[in-house]
Length: 147
Image (cartoon, rainbow, N blue to C red):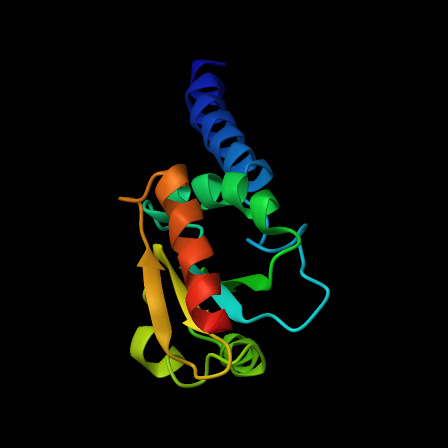
């Protein structure tokens, strides 16, 4: 009986932690808020489930996204949890990120604000940005791309 308890306790703890991590995984950055027209800015988050910076950045960004529901910005998550895959590269190309994707592929923990027309990076959001700073950077990126 003692051996069974010694075996079951760690298994239960591991399953509990794994279940908690799965349930609390943030959805794709732009899953709920999408601009209906052609976006002028793409906010591409390079992320993964194992990235500690992402665990700070993504919830903060998720609180900011609703403020831009009617703005010409599209939020996209490039998820490298399972490594660099062709599907991620295809998504990047479809979102106008083909120019910058090779430079950042596989890296995680940041969001780049990209001018959709030129493919140029306007700004980069990291865990060092507060929600207020993220809002300001996204607003400035939209203003700059709109010129």
